[in-house]
Amino acid sequence: MTKIAVAGFQHETNTFAPSMARYEHFVNGGGFPAMTRGNAMLNFRDINIPAGGFIHTAEGLGHELVPIIWTAATPSAHVEQATFERICDEIIAGLQAAQADAVYLDLHGAMVAEHFDDGEGEILRRVRAAVGPNVPVVASLDLHANVTQAMFEHADVLCAFRTYPHVDMARTGSRCAQILDEMLRGARYVKALKRLPFLISINGQCTFLDPAQSAYALLDSLEQETGAHLSFTPGFPAADFAECGGAVWGYARDEAALQDAIVPLLDFVLDHEADWAVDFLSPDEAVAKAMALAAEHQQTVVIADTQDNPGAGGDSNTTGMLKALHAAQAQNAAIGLITDPQVVQLALQAGVGNRFTAALGGQSGVAGDTALTAEFVVEAVCDGKCRYDGPMMHGVEADVGSTVRLGLGGIQIVVSSGKAQMLDRNLFKMAGVIPEEKAVVVVKSSVHFRADFQPIAAAVLVAKAPGPMMADPADLPWQKLNPHIKTSPMGMTLAHRVEAACKPKG
Image 1 (spheres, helix red, strand yellow):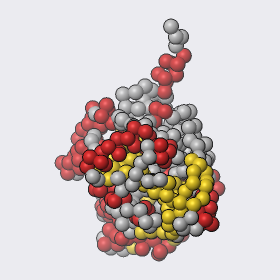
Image 2 (cartoon, helix red, strand yellow):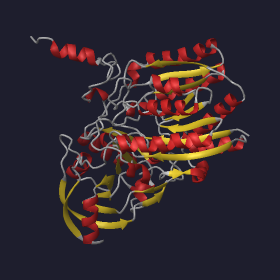
Image 3 (cartoon, rainbow, N blue to C red):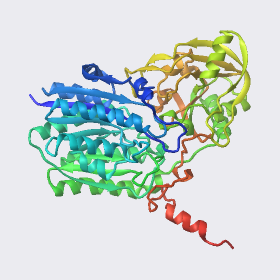
Image 4 (cartoon, rainbow, N blue to C red):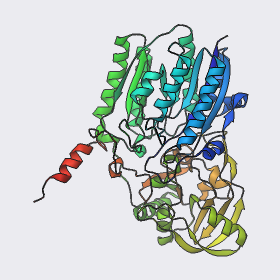
């Protein structure tokens, strides 16, 4: 029986976000499972996370698993140096003690630490140094991974999600287990990596929509035709370092099969460059259109408050969309989660059924974002705990701390003490808001919400309200990005932008 060491360390880093990821954020997990060690990790086998799928399949294949540590934190700015080192040290110590025949790592692929731009590249470098060149190292990655040369070199195989929303996380872990099993039985692969020459907004990466839907359908068919293992990550376009961006890569038994798989996939992505672009609405436009569509269809319309998505580094506390709802006198509307622990405490002090005046949100420091000062009604309180029942994080227990439902005219506002992306309807329902009974629902999310909300929606709109996660990568103040990559599909490179800015006018 072969021994496989298992560890997970996940973080999606928006280097432009306002707050860093510290150790306590990994301990608590936010919308992810809390930090878990040893055999307790085996309980992940029925949860839709990559490690869960890996554990379930690897056990079925007869391998002995040596779980070390699994941890993740809500996306934010950089992982604090001390936190990165503490968790890495625990992983490496566990690997050294395990003396395993192989290693599986559940990584994200877009981690930036305070002292390392390429977080996963450094993790994999240390893992490789600890286990030596002959021990297979396989890692699962998020669809938003920015795959670096170091990551690609130090891992034998990297396998990425193929859905966004990420409903296939467990399936990806299972695929890693199957590939690792093949390697332990003697399979060896040649590999190749190709980078994209342009950044893609995360809103443009949704696999419910083209061109992403067709790209992944092609990936599946090419795998079947060639026998190769393929991955395509459009990237996480808010990590300011040289290797930020999307990539296509793969593994095959011989070079001919590898090229037959990679070349058509890359060609498809590049040939559809213009189709990866996204159109956004202003807050007022989005609310007006949503109200009209809801009245026409007598069904819920969902608006994504994409630039304050806590799943991409926002703190879930901007008020642009709330102000737009309020200004339009929206009725039968809801918004969440807005994270403001001080307002939660004021509401708890006031008590259910009572009114209080407060300045809600507006702590982001983002230009154009200010608090909304108003008189609110405390409609309900809850402990902020719920189980995700939607397809994205099915089975995960979430805890966002004390939470209240506030009323403001025809708007219900779910205000939490801790932040979590609004990717599951139960985050509304725990506070007594039934999304499918609302005319307009605003979610602080970019795409993940679609898995659970799109089935109830007559339409889904995407709004650009002030927030720390710029929906269009071209709007970001890049400093370290490769100057020769386009900051948006069909857009200009950083080098061309600088050149254009330096040209004399007139």
